[in-house]
Length: 77
Image (cartoon, rainbow, N blue to C red):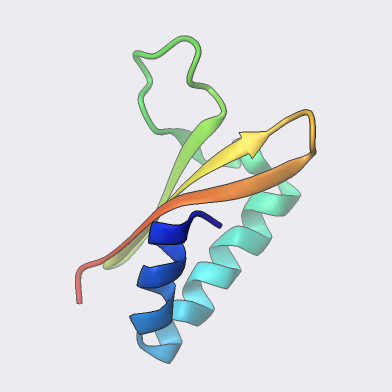
């Protein structure tokens, strides 16, 4: 998780934190099940965006390490 995303996660209400972890659990199972962040970027297919209600999570799929990195969390609450 990026440092800016971790800072946001620290101040979110508990139910929003639970939702972030639920999104990441789903992304771990099927990372490309979420839409690409910028569909016009042919080389950006590994940066995905998930939104649930007032919460959005942007993550990068690190293929070589087979892991996800959370780039940004936005909470409109």
